[in-house]
Amino acid sequence: MLYNAVSNFIQEREQQKPSEMSAEQLQETYNQQGYISGLPVLNPAELTDARRAFAALEEEFGKEYTQYSLHNVHLQYQWVLGLAKNPRLLEAIKAVIGPDVVLLDSRFICKYPTASGEPSADRPDGNVRDTQLPYVAWHQDMRYWGIDGGPVLSVWLALDDSLEENGALKVIPGSHHAGMLPHELATRQGNMLSVNQEIPEELVESGKSVLCPLLAGQMSVHDGFLVHASDPNTSQRRRCGLVIRYVPPCAHPIHDPDRPRKFLATVLACGTDQFNHFSR
Image 1 (cartoon, one colour):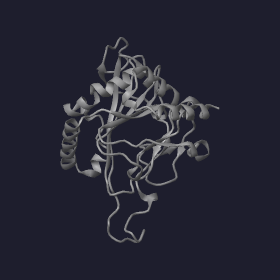
Image 2 (image 1 turned 90 degrees about the horizontal axis):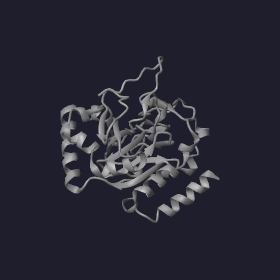
Image 3 (image 1 turned 180 degrees about the vertical axis):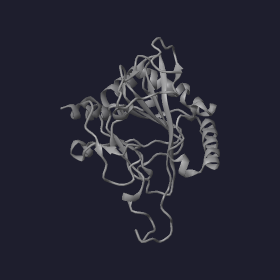
Image 4 (image 1 turned 60 degrees about the vertical axis):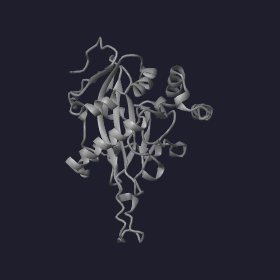
């Protein structure tokens, strides 16, 4: 029943572009299906500047590092903080959680083309088997964040087109309503999740998954309980984006002596913070 309601809701909303939705419609869509995709953020000049700046980081650190290790560099580079505080991006976040927004964490994630273009023992066309390529297993972000008292919103701000062939985000609409699902150690090699976990296959309604393609400069945003994943990049094109997590100031870290968490990179993105739950 829930999936049918969500499916009907998605079909209705597909007739309307996200950029045409009011704040109330954005909130209703997010609450119902757990995500919004295809929101325009960066204009062509802003996108060009961001891509040029990221290319400089690739040149400085190397692609092996920039694939996943540029973590919380919004504290170091003003241009990254500018992306995270972009007014068009924050309008969508404020529509969901209100006028007060804390930037919790950021990370660049890149899936680089890994096909060699030369014949190999793996496949006659020279491409590596998909099972050897980096991917992101089905999971929920809240499994790792240790946040209570408010939602965690995850943004993918696309620096490159994010399409099916280069490993775009895929989601299970409405799955955030189910709460936390069990996670276990992933058996397939290449999982980019740092703790290498995944939701057991039998608990994932993968037949109901929806692909969330983005053009460079657009963004998606999803709930911390939404079940989501992304497949390997089997194309010759990079897929790079800035992942940004936002919370309302009322949210707070869970006290867990077995896994203490510190959030040392938080920034007040907009509004005011009357709670001061995070060190800044």
